Amino acid sequence: MRFMMIVKATKDSEAGIMPSQELFDAMSRYNEELARAGVLVAAEGLHPTSGAIRISYPEPGGKPKVVDGPFTEAKELIAGFTLIDVKSKEEAIEWAMRMPDPHGFGEGELELRQVFEMPELTQDPEALARVNELQAQVTRKPKS
Image (cartoon, rainbow, N blue to C red; front, side, top):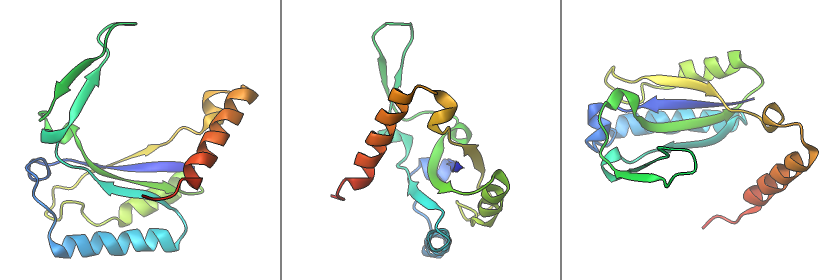
């Protein structure tokens, strides 16, 4: 079961304020612990929405609309994420509870969401085979 721990943005993260060295070190130790346990898939911070682009689809079959950031309502925005692969929802919660405050000053907030597994979306054997082949290609892709 894969889960994404979504780190909610704050005014400071949207202002581009970098984490302190102490917080950076604490997050590194946490990510190393996840990696040693064999559950870490990915962990990344995101740039503020001042450099983001939002694409919306205002009508079915219509042309997508592009809007440049920044976007408002920091509490609804994402500052980063950690993707883990665990045995249960309870294990995901345990790992999420161990994450250091992602902003380091009592404003951190996480959202824990389960990632759909392909058999939950389709039972079509051809579609599953195509997805499995694509995933194999992605994991074989050399790092740049």
